[in-house]
Image (cartoon, rainbow, N blue to C red; front, side, top):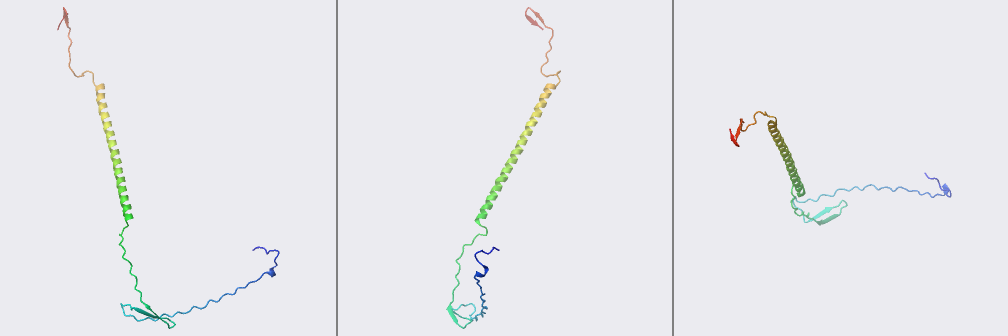
Length: 155
């Protein structure tokens, strides 16, 4: 890969040979014989015979009982709070949507009332202006030829 250095010749290098270490064959472990025990009872002292013939005796260990854990609710409190917050938010949004719809409908209704009033009032004005001028209503006065004598009016 890299060129050889110029001051060393290939014959001068030290050669190290590594010999593989043999792996020993696995030791076959025979199962320990089962010590007969009365069903449902645990002896105070237990003995085990190892495969090489040795006997190990010891006391039986009682399994520690876990401390009673307070039962957790099926749903966490955080999930309940988030759900209630979502329901409240949806209620507010729904109320705002109804409020804006109500305001829009009220605005349209008022606009229609204004247009209706303008049409009716405009029609009344048009009838007054463009109506027939021969009869205007009121009292009719017939003027006859009057005679003035000595500053008195005689009809």
